[in-house]
Length: 197
Length: 160
Image (cartoon, rainbow over all chains, first blue to last red):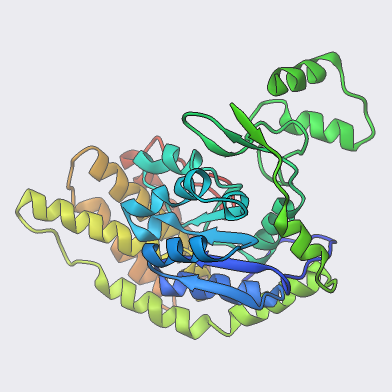
């Protein structure tokens, strides 16, 4: 599988407990191979939604990788259930959603599920590694509102991962300017102050 | 709104592990994926053979068939790239878009689905020239744009 240039960083999942939730065994195996390549030794594989819930209520996980669509309609509630109903630490575990395709009627539900990141298949090893690295560096707080529970989706402290678009028009522009040693202007400050208010 | 600053346990787990260069991790992962190529090809063939030859006459049954076809195609995405046929992933995604658009509009046209399935069978052939693959994908994209214009194709690994 061809891939982009891997990041110059260190990563080893040897001490990371991973829960992989995917009803499709082949999809599961592909991700497992990548995780093993990244050094993972503790990977709980679940292909039934009841098993996923059982695992999450019984032991702590550092990283949850899930393909909700693979479980059918019930799968879309999985992450929001995790964020709303589970106690810590799994309530705040890093969650990466991987999806082959999302029905148009489900995109909003998936986006608002409370995952740290959503990526689409096919997933290269480089992309998976970059997303895991990015989630490990996250400092976003978790917010709880009536309609959303999960990582704060306002990108004001941490720019979105390289190569991905931010959610606001100024995200990349501000991040790039600061990374280049530039100073924030008043608009950037207003943007951040408004976001944190 | 309640705000919680939770410990990033993933960061702690990575910090406590012996360091490994990301390039090495990727190399190992790609080598392991390479070992899955034949398994993925076999899986792809099973999924390809699961596509229907046509749709039934009854409207409810047709819609159920399109739903099943959508699921089959969705399962292909990601498998095909590991199998060494990344073009099939693009075709499978396109088929998902078309099937989803038909279901949303409560339509059950067979023709766009048939074209996708036929194209996917062609892409599976080992003797198909590279330029022909590109031409087939261009044709599929044109068809997809007519049926599902509001859903432009996304690159792999991108955010939703």
